[in-house]
Every structure is written in structure tokens, then in C-alpha cells.
Amino acid sequence: MPELLTTPLNSLHQQLGAKLVAFAGYEMPVQYPAGILQEHRQTRTSASLFDVSHMGQILLSGEGVDDALEAILPISVKGLKVNRQRYGFFTLDNGGILDDLMLAKVDDNTFYLVINASRQAEDTAHLRQHLAQFTMTPLADYALLALQGPNAVDALGKHIPGVEAMRFMDSQSFDWQGTALRISRSGYTGEDGFEISLPATHAEQFARLLLADEAVEMAGLGARDSLRLEAGLCLYGNDIDESTTPIAAGLQWAIQPVRRAGGERAGGFIGDTVILSEMQHGTAQQLVGLTVSGKAPVRTGGLLVNAQGDTIGRITSGCFAATVDAPIAMGYVDTAFLASQQPIFAALRQKQIPVTLTDLPFVPHRYYRG
Image (cartoon, rainbow, N blue to C red; front, side, top):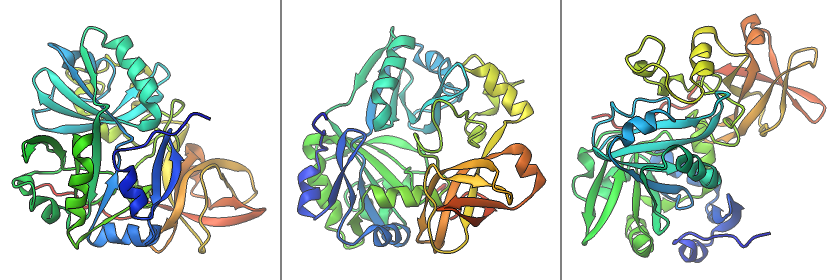
């Protein structure tokens, strides 16, 4: 087994007593001594700092790079204003998702991408294949911190004046003691918050500065997962992958009207035939939210069945949700079965646990839109 990579905050995690696990080739903190439930509640009520430096950060530049990106992303890249960012995904010929990502416009000819750690090799190869004429700069010596929660804006604003004026999905450069930081008002918890890209050499100093605020505590991957699930956000490798389309995953909201059938720049992206057809005619399965009866959580890979025990779907994510105070899950269910409105059960250790279809998100998003 290859040796695990570490992030610039590894020594800080150890000092703070983190439980470190292997994740996407990195040694990452899954939790700290307070535990996942407390870290989860801390994020919803105050602010938590997450180390997400394992994620890939890339700069793409060159004249016409926006047109080239629209050929591999089904989103409106050309409609993105400077210092704004957008959620998107690389699609495949079968309509499946190679990876989901964040895309920010730095200037007219430069874009900043944040991609999943587990997909860096695939994404980089994909970009080299389709955007070979443009300059691709992996920011390998940069860290990425996520400060999330209702008190995040006050905690960050003490050190970076101006962040309080940002809106959800703003992404811009700030100066901190002579060091350029790229800060976006976004995150993957459903809360207001910020993602801060900065040189690895400055990451621990900046993290300690934020942690000195009594409103801020560290949180690990465990809480990040339960928070994003409550927020109804997909995790690559669980809820979306190369075999799932954006439409089946309920991500059609991320495809702007200009790229849809009848739009000014309709189609023209990889997998457009499948994806645009599904937008019109539907999909065989749909990703749904589920609230689980009782207190036992259901887990990824579990089967969903009807009253007769026939398989009608599968669970892709599941956990005990601290805010909801109940086990929740997301999973794919046969569209034809959904239309029948029959009861759904999770198959768990030879038992059938009743589950209830629940609108996503489980907890309302609290993004700051100005």
C-alpha cells in the first residue's frame, strides 16, 4: 500500500488529538476528541474549521478557455462573472459524472477549479485531453480550509476585512499580511461559510489564528459528511459516479437554461444527447431523501425494498443526523415505483425498516445571499 500523503495541517491535527484515517490517499482527521455529533452541532450553531487541503486546486488559463470549458461542462461558463463561482460537473458520453467541482472566474481568461481528491488523476487526464492548448497549473503547494457556520463571517472578518460584504458564491482575492488568499463564500455543509485557499507554508499559522476565536473549533470528515447529507448535497463516489447522470441525481438545477434544449447555447457538451433527453423524458431511477424509522442508521450500499421484499432501489449515503435527531439517508429508487406511492423499506440484517420519502434538504440551507 502506498504511503499516505499528508496535508499542511497534519501536525496540528495530531496536536489536537484527531483520529486520523486514510481517505483518498491522504491521512485525514475523521474526528477530534469532542466527537462527530458535537462537531456537527458546533457547525450548525457557531463555527467549525475543516481541513480540505486534500482536494485538488487547479488554475486554467488562456484565451477562449470559457468556450473550451463549456464543451466539457453542461453549465454556463460564459455567463459567469469575474469573482463569482458556480457548481458543476464533468460529464461523460453516457451522461455519467466524471467528477463534480467548483469553478470560479478569476479574470476573463482564467478559471480556478476545486475538484475531489479521489478524482484528481481522472480529472487532470480529462483536462489534458480536452483542453491541451490551455495552461493548466495544479496548485499542489496550496492548502484549502473551510470555515463553516453562522459565526464564520465574524471569525474571518476580524482578520480579513471585506469578507462580510461577500455573497454566497462570491470568490475573490484578499491580502493577508502580504500573502494573497483566494476566498469564496461557499462550503459543503448547508451553512454560511467560507473556503480559503492559501499557500501551504501559511496554512497552520492561519488555522491557529482562526482557532484562537472562542467561536471556532476544528471538525473532521465525519461531521463534514453528516452535515452535507443533512444539506442534501451529493458525495462523489457515493451518490454520484460515472454511472449516474446529473438528472437522476437531481442536479438539473445546476444546468442553466442557456445550456438546455431551446437555450442559446443548448448542448454542445459531452453526454448532451443523454442528459437533454433525460431532462425531457425522465430517468429510470431518481435520487431521493429518506428518513429512517427508529434510531439505527442505514448505510451506503444497503438495499431498498417494497413490502414483498423486492429490490426497488439502493442507499447511497446514510447517517444519524444530529440536527434532525434521526437517521437519514439518500438513495436511488425506481421511478415507476415512486409513482405508485407504496411504502418503502430498508433491508437491514434480515429486517425491513420503514423509511419515509423526505424532501431535500433535510435541514434548510442558510447561505448568505445579501
